[in-house]
Image (cartoon, rainbow, N blue to C red):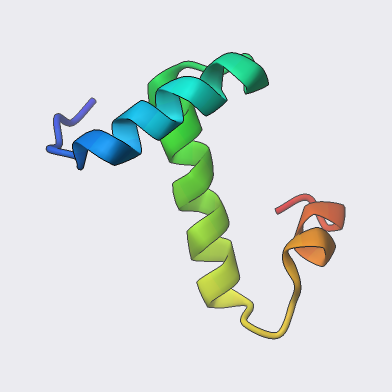
Length: 55
């Protein structure tokens, strides 16, 4: 585990979404980070296509 400083607004948004998605705040932010990385690694693929591929 590594401690990082995050924008307060990002953490608050993650808190809201994490409740809906049944994830911890940390796991929600990890999920968003993985999506962002996958989108950067595959710029020609839409988000929906990426989800279909298990990204």
